[in-house]
Image: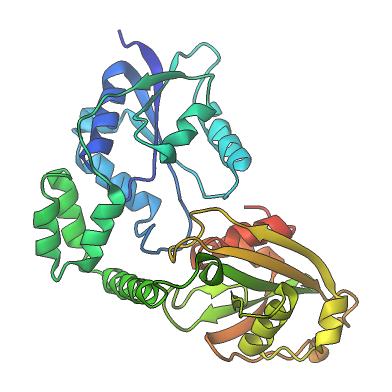
Length: 348
């Protein structure tokens, strides 16, 4: 008889490596069923989150026999960039698959401060797995996107990832998304080298302009890497000697050519919120100040909407209905879905 009815394993699994595999096998050994919490689900692809949650589930299943596969249940959880919301979502989803009499184990390896979330669920019995493996998924992704060839990358990863995962990555690399992410990785690395030596607070502060009118929000489609082709809230880096509000309005006008006076925008400022999660951006530590401009009272006539036109770093701009936002999660840049979820009356 197993020690537990349910064992829970939490991870992002980007890329699924032998350290992850050790946790999964331990969970299968001690429990009847294993609930795999797949973090960073549903968002757009980037160099930190290159694989969709379904692809990560495929990687995990590829390493197991059929008798073990049927004992796994995958629970995808989005990034809320808010621990309280994330913890609640995990508990809610787990609650749908456990009963009050189930013995539940949380299987994990407390390697560093990035695994602090393991302490957030005291109701589950912690099973701390000891491991001599020193594997970092960030290093694996860097190798995967920087190597001259896929074969070279996979050969260097061989001791750290299961063989079936190597086969998966080899096949996945044939898709154009791999080339796009390699280009994005190269662009971010180039930008980081340019900023070397510049004070941290200068390159880490951005301003965004969230403009709403008549149940619509103004979004732009990015023209360049990072996030090429993704939809985003207009914004950019703060310039020297300008206020946050001035910077937000400047970026808004530069990118969308919004035909509203600066004075009218200042009057329509409804709120300012800071988004500072340390992992909200692949570009490094970027803290943004989102300014919500609510153009309330704008005429409902379709012919007199505020005029917009894509410029600067945007390919196109559009007024997007609030009701469309939930379906756009995988099309939005970085944490912009979470930002919209925070400001607007939308339900994920």
